[in-house]
Image (cartoon, rainbow, N blue to C red):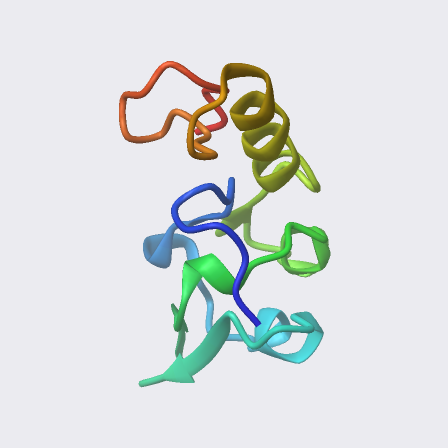
Length: 97
């Protein structure tokens, strides 16, 4: 399942990852995988912003504003009559990142 492209607030900092694999275990959409004893993002756009990964990361490697990216992009797109965008690419809408 894919959501809107480039709107998730999910941020992953590999340098903080301890390789526990908890994010892989709790993510309902398989956004993370383990590779060489560290977590890697497989597809950011599959993130539904539930926040399970961030809540279970004891090392602060993952942050996400649960539920805001897609919702904000859709609402802003509807209000402006434009394609949904969270503003991460420098566009006018949202500013989620």
